Length: 352
Ligand code: NAP
Ligand code: G4F
Image (cartoon, rainbow, N blue to C red):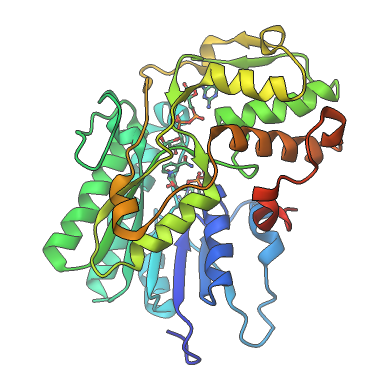
């Protein structure tokens, strides 16, 4: 708590898709929000620029600190300096395909990085609550529907690292009584999704194709099926987990499953194009092992704290297409799409 009674949060991965929405949510709830950012030779803060506050302002509530999940010393220093009530560990090398190319780095950040943070909390005897960004990728080849009891069968260095981080979170809860929750989240997307993840790659390409700046889009496995939800819905679930009387692990999901092919069909249809004329496959986007089907069962989160996603597949595709058209200077109404999707109004009004 601050001297003025505000709750204090610390977010790793604040510059990422979910970190940026979570920061907005917590600021709107009156928290002082602290985020760890990495030093980069070019700006990596585009997603949080609209909520930046000048540190010279008195009582500014949005504070950024340099750090890295590879650096135990800085994690210890920041935890002891900031004294957070809630820690959200969203920082990660989050790209599954890239994890096959840089497996050791992925494990260092996604697995050992989580251990470093929990160990710092334990060492400092901090009473903070801890949220771990676990992933449905951990289920790998276990068939859907996946729930909290489904066996993990990871299919990538990313997923194996997240399994380690999940078990470490549970272990630190049981061994040391830390209020540590593992949120096992199905894919969540938004107009702030990184452009190399398949949903955003598609909606971004559509805008470029319409602008005649791109002719084709090159993709990998179109048969993969995912349970795609909307990131702002999911960050609300993260926060809700930490407000419960007891720490536990929860799945967040929409319960709907669609293939990459269906995403293509739905997205291109919105701008009156046939995706088959624009999509080529490129072997470089196939993974050595992929996850075929993810569809989550989030009934535990619904029963325990009433969490339900507001945005489902069709609305998600639509709002991502609309926002990418606008970013590219195109008028969505030309394609019969309303300029601002009502569901996104709150979250997108300040997008840079
Ligand atoms: P994202 O957009 O890729 O953001 C990842 C964040 O982690 C960025 O802020 C990044 O900083 C930071 N980061 C990377 N390496 C770091 C390091 N060495 N030290 C500290 N921070 C580091 O990912 P996201 O979609 O927001 O996902 C957030 C978390 O949820 C991740 O842990 C991800 O694995 C997990 N997750 C995501 C989904 C999903 O569908 N989105 C589903 C389940 C779980 P830079 O901006 O400097 O790169
Ligand atoms: O968009 P993706 O890269 O997401 P993926 O691998 O499901 O991982 C995301 O969701 C996880 C939760 O389940 C997170 F933990 C993780 O951090 C990340 O946010 O790929 C989705 C599917 C895959 O099966 C992939 O093989 O789309 C297929 N795909 C086909 N062509 C492609 C492409 N994926 C990408 N990134 N790029 C392609 O060209």
